[in-house]
Length: 181
Image (cartoon, rainbow, N blue to C red):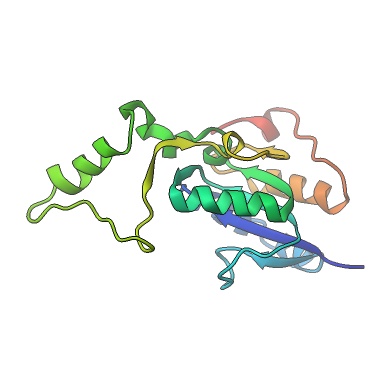
């Protein structure tokens, strides 16, 4: 039996969802026997591969690098899971949206609040350009499964992964599985 190709991606967020993934503790050993982790912040793989069966995408789309990455991820993945509240709604990452664009945030951080030599960082290929609007994943690409939580608990993550490993669509019902925050 071929192992399921699993990936995880970290866009604009705090990595709390990935930390919660690690809270699967001993079940990670069982999971490792059933999947091939083909891309993740947990492993040193530079390019997102073709033919991914399931990907957990943490974080919102906040810069040009995220935008390019999520489009690549969607085109190369069979099942995309919007992993955590930032990916599902924009959450904390999108708190800058009421300012209307990225410019007020950049001005405040890099010009107004510096002691000397304020400059907005911009180095093509090194510092990705912020998008004016932070977007949840589903506004950019299609999403197959939504996994809310800030972060989602290990129990929720396990429930989703167990269903997907059995070839089923996860059925998240009840407060324990669909509560945000």
